[in-house]
Each structure stands twice: as C-alpha cells, then as structure tokens.
Length: 374
View 1 (spheres, rainbow, N blue to C red):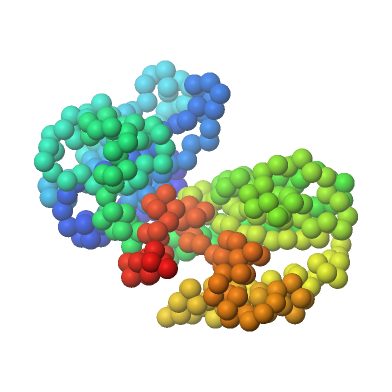
View 2 (cartoon, rainbow, N blue to C red):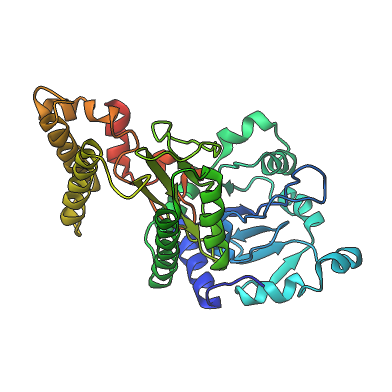
C-alpha cells in the first residue's frame, strides 16, 4: 500500500470539488502500466496526479466517477488474478482500499462502458488526456472519435481542479519541503562529487541513487551537462574539464509524489574564473532581490520583472546589454539570457498541473485575456 493522507483529507477534497462544480458527472482516469520493450517489462508506474489528489490510490488500472447529482462516488478497477498474485504478491481487494480513501462503492473495470452509457443526456466532465491509452479509452466510452476528444474536455472541471490544487495544505507543504530537502542533498552530492575527468553519467548515477535511497525517485530526467546552453540536454557522455561550468537541473519526488526542482551551475574544479564569477554574481543578485520581494499581496509577475531588471543591470555593467534597460525588459530582450523565467508552480508534478493546460495554471481569467491580446 502506498503512502496516503488521511481518509478525511480525500473526502474533504472531493466535497469541495463537488461544491465548486455544482452538478454533473466527473470522470477521473488513472494511469495504466506502460511496456518498455516487451509486455511484462514495464516503465516505472506513475499515477495521474489529479487522481492521486482526490483518490490517493497509487496503482494502475483505476477509473473513478463522482456523480454530483446522485451523490455517488465509484471506483472502477479489478482485483489481482491468481496468476498476477503469484508474480506480484497478495494485495488487498479494491473494496478495502476504497474505504481507506473514503469511497464506499467499487465496480469492475468492465462495467465502466455500460455505466457511462446509462448517463445518456447528462454532462460528463473530464480532464485533458495526456496518455494515448486514456485518449483511446475516452473515445470508446463516449462513442466518439479520437480527434473530437480535445473539444469535449471540460474547462469548468480544469478550473475547479486548479483552484483546489493551487493552494497547498500544511501536509502538502511538508511533502514539498521533504522533496526540496532531498533535492538539496542531491545537488550537494553533485557539487562534492564532480571532478575533472569524470563523465556526466557518473554524476547522474550519484544523484539518482540519492533520490532512490530516500524512498522516492527523481522528479524528472536529470539534466547534468557541461553544455548548459542547451536547455534540456539529456546526453550524459561528456567528460568534465577543468575550468568548464557544470549545470545541474534536477530534483527529487517524494514517496507521495510531491516534487522538488533546483537548478545550479558550478565550476568544474575548485574555483570560478573571474568572468564566471561575475556572471554568477549577477544571477545571485537577481535571485536575492526576488526572494526579498516575495510576500502576500505582491504579484508574481512583478517579482519576475524585478529579477529581469536586476539581470539586465548586471549584464549592462559588463557591456553585454546596452541601451535603456526598462525598454529592453519591456521588449523582452533579457529573455535571450533568461529563457525560462523566474519559476513555476510546485506540487505533485514538477511543473504542477501543466497537464491541465499551462494557460489555466497561475492566471486569472483577466490576466489570461491580457496575455492573449498582448
């Protein structure tokens, strides 16, 4: 059994979701096992984060339904067969697991098609599928084409989920803190372990092992490279060279799937060169200014623009940027050196809720309209 929060936590989350949505049927697709190179050699299983948030069960093959109007909550899934038990060991039946997360009714996976067909004429809300098998299931269950699924996604459902998952509870903050602390220890492992002559993949083994040893995993494929100018570089074959810079962009995911994500650049060897230190100091100054500005009531956009301005000031002092800095930042010239921006949402995904549509996460409707018009 995976680690979960209390029964009351999941019941309270679903209750708040039902209040926001008001009516209709909410359909939650859990993830399936995915084969790596033959059927029984699976990729590591990762449950859908929204499914985990509302139902807590970290196991493949589950679907859940909340019928708000009929006040029903149902988990669809199958117990292990005798053969599966031989390979995987004994598992509690789904009916027992459902009770732990506050759901009283379970049904077999084979019954989902008939159940959804019985809802003819009623509104069925579902979130954007990001896995092809879930896209195919939805098309079959709803008797529609694969191409039509994206137009049937419920924006109201997306916004309701985002409104709940955006505000972290104390127990979630503890999990995020745990993930960040493990991420810090991974980066220290890299900093102390990196030596000229090593291969990048040796460091990959060190930091991945650190995450696994804490009972979790990496929160995304680590980026460890001497070619940091390539943003998402997963080639680990380079040799560390004295005087080069080494970029580490990675983090840990806790056992409950809350993620950390830290990026740091260090010198290969014991010291920065003078020019490296100058650039590093510019970044550090911008970081410290942004942290000092963070407080309730302050717009994140304003903090982001402050960091951009500080970076531009430092780059102008070095002669790398020229002209009026306010105009340069307004026109986005700083983005040549600061492509990713100041940060992103944190939570159960390393970019929290990005699967729901980036335009719905972190924006009010008014700000989203302003961005689209701008």
